[in-house]
Length: 265
Image (tube, rainbow, N blue to C red; front, top):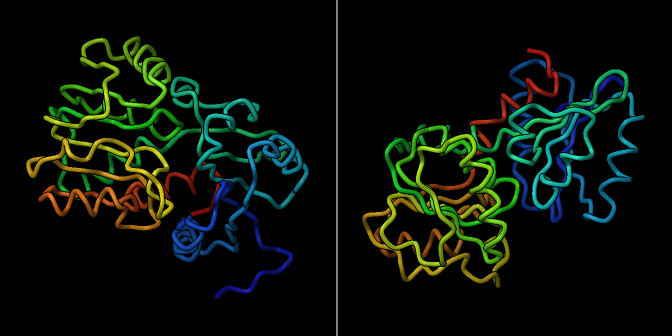
């Protein structure tokens, strides 16, 4: 374990809840590989306190940046001074850099990480029909990345259908050739089924969608990292589905996150 001193550069991950995050351990490996005197710490912040929290970080001179996760990705967009075109298009931010003058810059890397994790495990999204559950920041980023990867069809399910439709409207302006619709809770008939919600982090959470619609020919993917085997993945595995854990999404974007926050190589 490295020694933390007055020279140590500070980074963070902000979430609510935060106990489930795997980023501190994963980023520590990046720091060690790069020879960086840095530490990334979990920061438990409620939504109603987020703006005040972010404002305070502008004055912390040895703070390099932070990762934003559930439920703060969408709100973080308007708390940054500038964001990348990708983040503006998606409408969410999951990585923030504090610049020397105290301004904050944001980007979204979840989509790249998710698609990279699929490909790392031999799942090529191009040409697949996809059922995507969720309409939060991660779901938005994943939807854009899948459309960019050339999926054959992309249908979105969210309990608030208007939120799913809003993502589709944004997507259709950029990827008009990809068929997409807001659909109901059944994942029947799709090649790739994705849970991009936080349902499954708690043992008493309901299933994010109707698992009775799954079949052994499908791949079921998660973005949740703790527990690794969510109730959804356990049910899918029982039904003979191929499953994709949530951790590869983080592993495939962690170096990009470090680069964005200015962690020296």
